[in-house]
Length: 216
Image 1: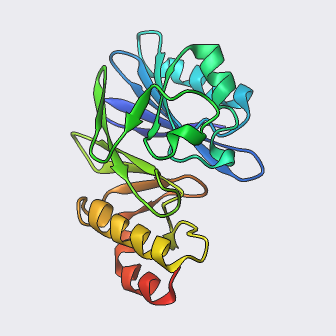
Image 2: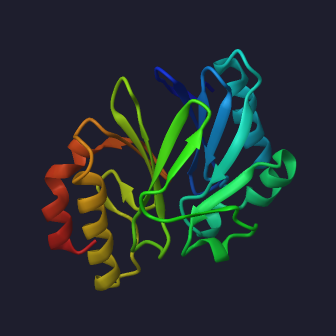
Image 3: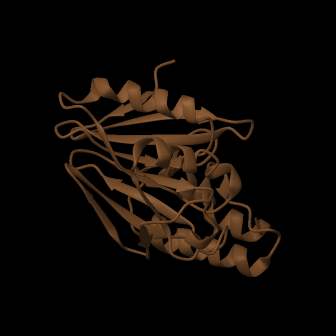
């Protein structure tokens, strides 16, 4: 299976789905430097190592995993994290409010608006409260095309993530995605969720009030 989903001007984006939960694992690789960011070491370490091996074709330089970023604390998104850290020695990042729950020490604690600088690309942390206290979406702004949002379990095709039937959590998550995603990025922005297929902000924007009315 070809793991390459986007070949952009400066980076490639590769994806695999792992586990019975259909978790997406994303890998960004800088075409010039080989610097890599992996988002959500969810499960199946051999499959993730295969994904990293696939990306060796994306740069003339041997790729180097610089960071393993976690979108949120839930167990199905972190099962391969300890093994991948041990195998690669890569640093880790997560939202400051979720980091204590991760199964490894977190090197970089993220607040809303923090920017990660990699050799050849930047990624911005967007704090989306509600699914978990410290959920982080990672945004790559392509210099020659649409932005790409790695939304974890905060935004999916058809709605926001699970907020435990808690009206306050739901309203907080809806407010955050409305302001920090839909209010900040245009319709052609690609959304890469933590499970399932991608979408765009433009495809989802007309349904925001519908989501608000139904309460989930």
